[in-house]
Structures are given as C-alpha cells and as structure tokens.
Image: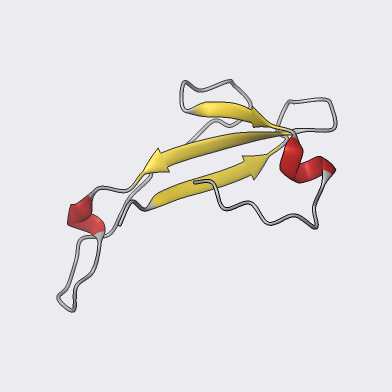
Length: 70
C-alpha cells in the first residue's frame, strides 16, 4: 500500500490546469484494526508554490477520464 493525500486546487493560479499538492502518508498512520495516530497535516499556504506541488492539466481538460495516479 502506498497511500497519499492529493489536493487539486487553483489557489493563486490562472489557467485551465490545476495545481496538485501530494503528501505521502507514512505507515504509522495506516489503520490495521488498532487505534492509529491522527495524521495532522498542519496549515498549508496553497497560494505559494510548495515543493510537493506539480501542475496537472490532463485530468482537468478531460474530466471524464479517471485519474489513477497518486
């Protein structure tokens, strides 16, 4: 299992695409029947370009095509 949190947004971005923020979720936050710690992402300023962000055009230009990338 390789879980990620993905946020698509257009904060402070002009154009037909979306900015894509991806953060890996480590195994300590994956439940297996026991109580697991809460994944606290903290506060993100999505208006600035973070190192974990890319620009995703294809999904937003073709919304009927599922996006299975994480």
